[in-house]
Image 1 (cartoon, rainbow, N blue to C red):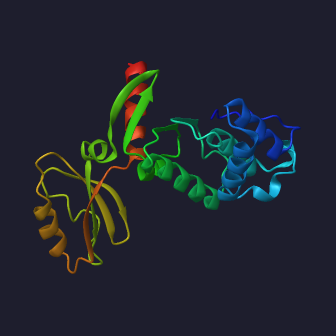
Image 2: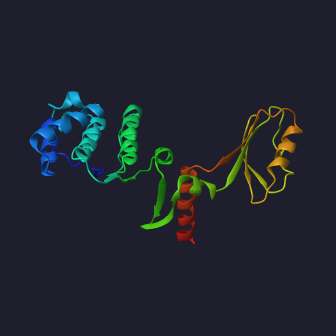
Image 3: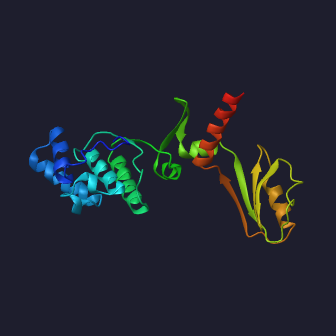
Length: 227
């Protein structure tokens, strides 16, 4: 499925999907049955008689996915499949892709919506300047990143963690502080310092998200080019 919609804008949705299914070798009866199944599942069954160009961008994207699925493909390769979708449509498409993967169909997609990538994918690759610079499971990629501690201590004031070795404060907002831990830093020393200020209502470790990892990788490349 290409990012730029490869659909005939003046052709009706139902006729177009049946036509595309027939091109993949489905009989007329099987093609029509598959079109009904996928348009109902993707929420565009009531638009079968409409021209594609008269649909919203979100519904065009749903039809585009239906076109990719209608012939029961053995592999799915999708470019920015969530582009232009509202949250409800994102959930529908996410469920479809997870179900296809559970059936054993390899699903490969590109996206800059990294929260969705983190939630859906088993393995993730980050491409920079045409080169794969990171590729692993989501957990493994996040585990290799910086560790942060989130501490909420109502009685704490700025500077309460300054004396703890290997700790850098990255954010301080009210009673909530986010700290970056260097390798080997003792998180229990941080806890003791926080408790010295009074009650601690939150103390949790947080690995960097894929968004943060991507930003760091891109920033490293920008710095290399500038150097």
